[in-house]
Image (cartoon, rainbow, N blue to C red; front, side, top):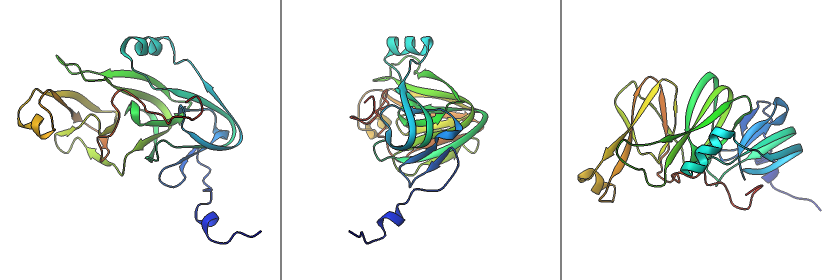
Length: 233
């Protein structure tokens, strides 16, 4: 039998040898020969070669945070040889490389990062108010690749250019040098415009650096929302 058409040429695997590269807009390709990586639990869609997956403990301090606050990012350790493909909910994938630097990433936006990067969970709280469901960020520190997901094409805002504010569910990440505070709106026109009558929250940013904001408020607050039915999912 013969198959005709350009399907297999149009969607052929990319030939990049970087540890992280894009396979289209919505899939991440990982070259495993660079060493282990951390990936969102359930985000594996395919692999070629000998790739192993292990759900590991996240360390005593992170386990305690998860138990007390309900926070957490469900990650799996991926190791071996070959190529690994990751995706989540057909969201767009964005790749950044950090060198002896720090990123603060919305826990719901994490897709994967190099095993050389240290990470921890930080709860975001507003003074005098409780954020419904909890909001947490993952601090990534070191050198390596980081892949995040966005719902659509994001915008990178230079916080040094002007006072900068973002919806907590639309902010994907911010770079080192950026200071963040949670601004509470206890009611009034701003609250009505947001479709509610109670407290609303904004993230206020200053300092030097960038904030990445997606064109959606669809991030699930307090949950990484991995795909159901995947590995460990």
